[in-house]
Length: 270
Ligand SMILES: [Mn+2]
Image 1 (tube, protein in one colour):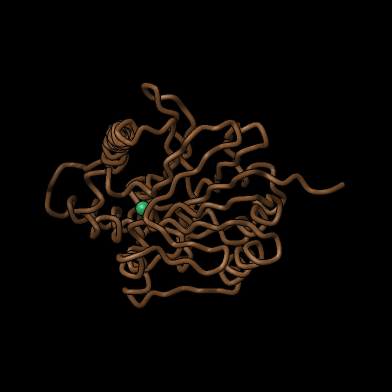
Image 2 (cartoon, rainbow, N blue to C red):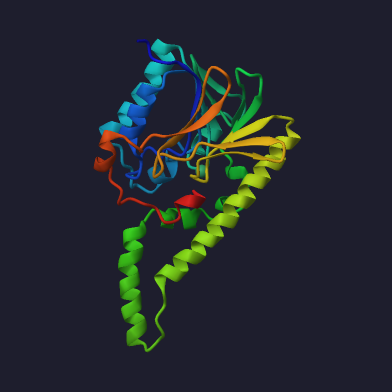
C-alpha cells in the first residue's frame, strides 16, 4: 500500500546542534510523513550553540538534514525554512531577498493555503513574545539543565543552613516559574493572534514556545508546532485541509531509549 501523502507538515524548535534535540525520533517522523509542503518553522539549527563553542553534531543530526534534502529532491516536497531566534544568523542572508535553492526556500515568514482554502500565516513567533528577545542570557542559562539546578540547589540549601538562613524551597520557586510560564504563553498567543488579524488571514502557524496547540482564539485558528527537544510534536494537514497535532514520541518503540534527562527547565521561553 502506498504511503499517505500529507498536504503539509510543520515542525519547529528542533534545535539541531544541541544534545537535547531528539533527532532520531524526528528522522523517523519525517520518513513516516511524506508531504507536498514541509515547513520548518524556526529554531531548526541552533546557531546560539555554535557561537558558544559547545557545538554538538552527531550523525543522527546529519540524517535529519539528509532526509530533508532527499524529500526536496526525490519527493519534490516544497521545503520552507522559516527563521527563528536561534537560527537568526540566517536572517542576514535573506535580508535583501529570500534565499531559494531548488525546492528549498529560506524565509522570515510565509503564507500557506490549505486545501480547503484557508490562508495561514507561518512564522516562528519570537518577534511577538516580548521576553526572549531581551533575555537571551536567561534561555542560555536554561540550557544548563534541570539536573544542574537540583545539584546547585542542594549546595545552596546547605550554604543557607550554614549562614543560619531559613529554608528556601526549590519546588516553590519552580511553581512560581510555571505560573509565570502560563501567563507568558497566554500573552504570546494573544499577541500573535492580534498580528494575524491585521494580516487578514484565517489562521497562524508558529512555534517558539515549545507548546503544541490547536485552538480558536477570536476568529483566528491558532496552531503551534511544539518542539523536538521535549514533546516531539508536529502539525500535519490532510487532504481535506484539516490540521492536527501529532505526538510522535507516544507509542513509539524507541521512546524509552530517548534520553529524557535533558529536560530544560526554561524550555518554555525558548
Ligand atoms: Mn525560538
